Figure 1 (spheres, helix red, strand yellow):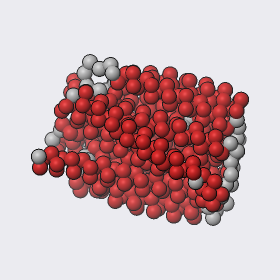
Figure 2: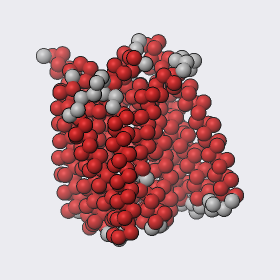
Figure 3: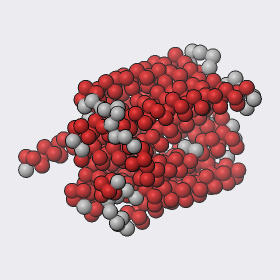
Figure 4: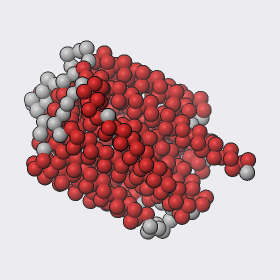
Length: 428
């Protein structure tokens, strides 16, 4: 009984540390959004959202590629094996990212010279490249420390990162180009935080930079599907922002982002739990089987859904005060946007937990195909909705895509895969 109680206590500590860490990051993002909304124009805030959404895509692609093999393999390797795996993946990342960054910079300079990019978008693209490289370096070590189940170490560096980010963005609002300066501030904060994370991991468990030769080819068959799924999901969870900017204008992006910002607490809870869920779900599947895993994930989803509904009820009651006093901005179709975001985040909170049942079984191919169908439906509906209903139409399309995706995951969760992810990784 005491051992069971200790395991539950350890699990609660892991989960709470991950949630607190994500809370810090979400609080930092909220503070950044609030500073930019209150201190800059809608167009400058819209430019910042376009840049940060592109960074989010690349971070999600990296996490989708590296996280499944890390989460599963690290728990089954000895200390030297873990050092080789972490070092091998880090070596491949260091080889690829500078080359890709250089190609992007040269391409951006060419487009700027050809006047496809202008005095606002050209520097924004260059700053986004710098921030992306720094943030991907930082996120790799965060991911490894989470796979080692050391969220406390991540939490300490996240505190430093958030302070630097918020301070840098505040300074950016005092400059003639707030969006570009704010993105550049993100890169400086990520560089400092990434150095601290890498040193923390090296003290805990040094990696072997020459280890695991050919690791990319080894994990590619499985990781490619999870990466494709992440890319496709981004097209309708974030990609609609670029659709809005193209069809409407950059100022409309600010209306979307500002109303979405108010749902940040729901996102932080779901994301904080999600940072640990894949290794936990894989362990539960390996030790207890699919029935117990499904039951636990459905309970998590139910709890998050209840929390989302309670939070949105309070937000809806206080909405007039929040827009007039806190944000000091009013937007077209404000209430419609807020209602749609509430429904979207409710579906996302449920779907975000249930998806780990499929992920733990390694069913990334079917997940990618489902996400592709959802993305096509979402973007088509968003395009038609914008033409007919304006800004709110884009969110209506996103809600349709999320509902289709969640329904598909529920249906697939009752169809058992031939073998779990752990077995697939052992055969590679």
